[in-house]
Length: 261
Image 1 (spheres, rainbow, N blue to C red):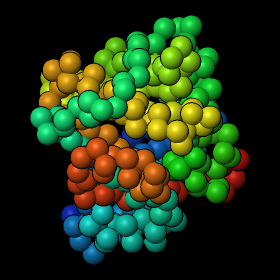
Image 2 (cartoon, rainbow, N blue to C red):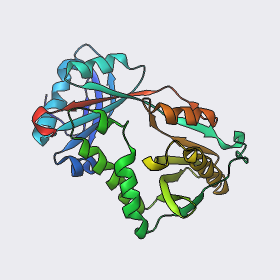
Image 3 (tube, rainbow, N blue to C red):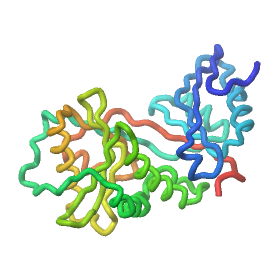
Image 4 (cartoon, helix red, strand yellow):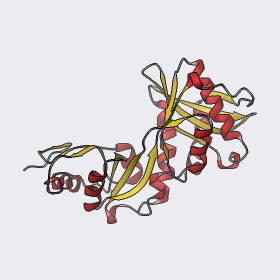
């Protein structure tokens, strides 16, 4: 059976993958992401060789895969082939019709970012994320994670359908949100952060409430996002604001030993 570049479709295994050029840009080697996977027969492990041959042909140094939490057979197949569990991910969502606006909370100023804001927002992105998968995988250089989030901020500024917002406390930029209006009704929060110096003072809650109220003014009916389970403080914030949580997903990494540092 010959190797395929993006898909395995056999009686035992259905699997698709793609390259992640935005991650390759900071890692310095090709990065792949498995986007779907389903075991259908007893020869799934043997059929994984199709993917491994293509992975090695491309010289990939990192492969990620995110699976629904109930896909235990698929997760065990990944582990049999050198993948390691990295994180559990939740996707908080709220129907904005149920949100009372938290009118007792004094809102923070929200503004569309300009190019002049990018350096400070990149600095916040570089220092604010400590619980995400690129930072937590001990096989990866921690600097990869920091650069990845800095790039994410800049890319969102130039993205045709995403918006980059600055959060101000008085005249000081203390955080940012990357958002996108999906299907004319769902405001998806791709990435958000509060500067480390501003954390622990209630500004995070004010920022989240301010952005929820802003979403309402744009006509959004719900807010949806994604967060690592180990980020307990922010998970508690979402729960306190009335978000509900769908079943989580599991993230796995395969890393080539000589291609991670």
